[in-house]
Length: 198
Image (cartoon, rainbow, N blue to C red; front, side):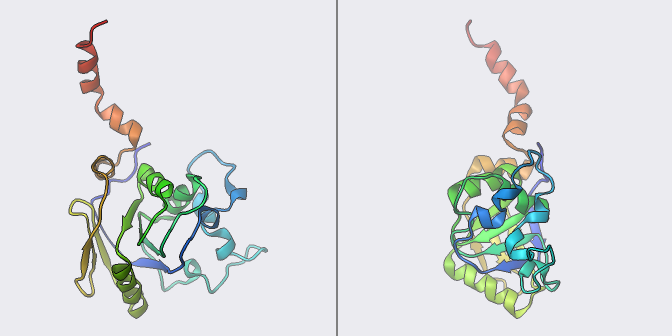
């Protein structure tokens, strides 16, 4: 399934300065019954976001109207726990296109890259600067530049580079998942197969 192409994202950010956020907190297990990648955003951080009667918890960041944007900024070790890909689906379906943290669980990172969410790992020092910039001004903007592999705090001009696998980078910039990548190479695959001896 193709996703939005990711090149340069300019956006405000939602801060979640909590360490060790696991996939069960991102999307509780009771919401994993669906097989399509739709509707999960409604239950992103469900137990942190809503009371048991379904009313919003006013003190949770996603319910605070002063915060918004396509970037979620999480604490260290974001996406730990089980391998459920639904956690990445929930992040995407809610509207986030980038998650910034100082460390990601490997499986969560890969699940994000497979569905069009860019996980940007920065140093702990730079992450702290991002949180402080949002605290000073919830409307402060950020630029996430995938081609250059940089993230910039626009209010201060401070910038840091991030790493990404070149294959996944190519898929993100083209809006491809793994299947789309193979389909795009159909001509080359046929030509290669034609040269193979039977």
